[in-house]
Length: 299
Ligand SMILES: Nc1ncnc2c1ncn2[C@@H]1O[C@H](COP(=O)(O)OP(=O)(O)OP(=O)(O)O)[C@@H](O)[C@H]1O
Ligand SMILES: [Mg+2]
Image (cartoon, rainbow, N blue to C red):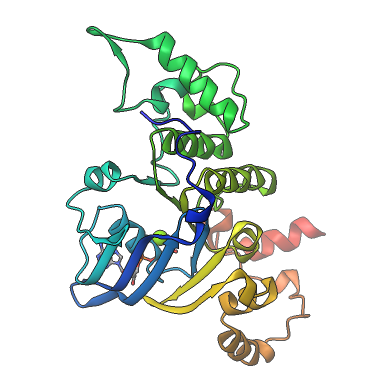
């Protein structure tokens, strides 16, 4: 079993592709969720995949993590073509996926979650003391202190849960870790915590795939940026080729924003509608005199 220290790769491996998607396509019936997607993920780098709703981000993760098959192209791990028949097959070669909500079992303790389906046994029994000790040590190495490892994971903050899932993947020897919108439901501070651990996973030599809607979060940690739009790659750039402003503009869809601003120009954004002209519908239990009620209350 590997430890955090053992999963560190040689520094010169940093530009070696660990995962290559070559012209990947995926259709659901007649919906083309992905078309001609080329992405290279390197060890010791954070590859950010950005895109709007329906862009194909989740489909991409599902293909890499073995949950879905792909219809076209090839996926190579360390240069060897792979088709994963199941998530277990992907995990077996070191691809770990941290799904936002499904990452951990909320009612189970922190240490139990850490070892879920990889339990250490002593004869017929679980070696609880050993598992607690390792879970505690590994979380400390990642810089997170959870004093009581018997606490159910459901009582941790969203950010802490993500970190436990990242530490677990690193400990069990993941080579590629995919994080599915890990900061989407988090506040500023908790997002910061998760971003810090994304950097730690990178420093441990993993290839990190960070899926996000947020160009600011991506730019804080990303080496490489890929934007998907309607299933196609519309931008693929290294950090040195792209500023945060450019990434934000690309994400906002410069041209579309321009068109939208023309469309909304006639709506007078500075206008404030008068309260008594607003129809409140069912707000007061469907009372047909609701408007009068509002006006009465305002007197
Ligand atoms: N199981 C499915 N069956 C049919 N169509 C699907 C299925 N899953 C996804 N799609 C379609 O494929 C396209 C890409 O969806 P996907 O979920 O990958 O997008 P996404 O980038 O993850 O979006 P979001 O940001 O909303 O999560 C969408 O048009 C979606 O409707
Ligand atoms: Mg999605």
